[in-house]
Length: 317
Ligand code: NAD
Image (cartoon, rainbow, N blue to C red; front, side, top):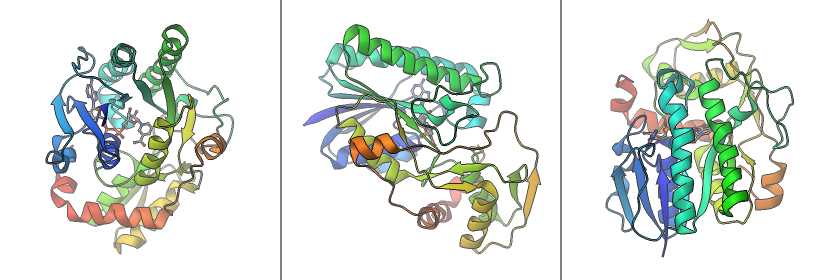
């Protein structure tokens, strides 16, 4: 059996990733400090053979005595609200956390997958965004802590590949949604679902014409696993190229929940990207990967999960 270390494994994406690895008979050591994640996200995995959850802050140190085949560095606050509240932690986990996890991969001879982001493209001047686009990032703006931490992480990962020959893979993840998102993390889909289920107004930023390309979590995880098991190095975009105006997301969610909520318009946050769409030519060609879950289907599954977890939906942040 092979073994993976997943940092941030108790978060939204990390928990789905841990599950997918176990399903493929990969043992999983999940390291998380529960800064934005929760043990509840992986509680259902604790009984499964080969799964271990250890509370650890990867910016302190990362020590794993046993052999490791894969290191997946997913720890990081990921929503704009989270990294605005946790700016230093965000920069530390993207820099020092990346350094420590790369060190682990080097020591163990493991393949290394780093969760980078479409945010490395900033407010893009090229549309859709291919991996060859270098981005339009404001380093001192409110999103700078996240964007620049991830850009640093990509540079450090590339340095470890070139200097130490570590087998690295950089994935640029685009907006992903699904069960186990936090209803108050500030991102459009969980916010609209929470508001629709509570009968509150759905708050759309600006006039809602800005677009998002949203990927259902099971599609994303399929892409991540095939990338991990390939010999590709990236950077590689993984996301759903189907682009939707934010106002349409609000309308679909209102309809699918059967909610009587109204739609209200609020000011747009500073540096909020106007358009975002992955060019997934590389993932299609290199991995044969393509998202499968249509927007309405993914939204229905997410709404069902939220409806079944009123404790999560009603909880303070
Ligand atoms: P999340 O907040 O749900 O998960 C992040 C996890 O990392 C949490 O469980 C948190 O407790 C943990 N963590 C944070 N700092 C840590 C530290 N110092 N040591 C150990 N654990 C720590 O976020 P997510 O949406 O699941 O995102 C996971 C990764 O994917 C992040 O690296 C994020 O940047 C990247 N990403 C996510 C998206 C998306 O749409 N969700 C898009 C692009 C990139």
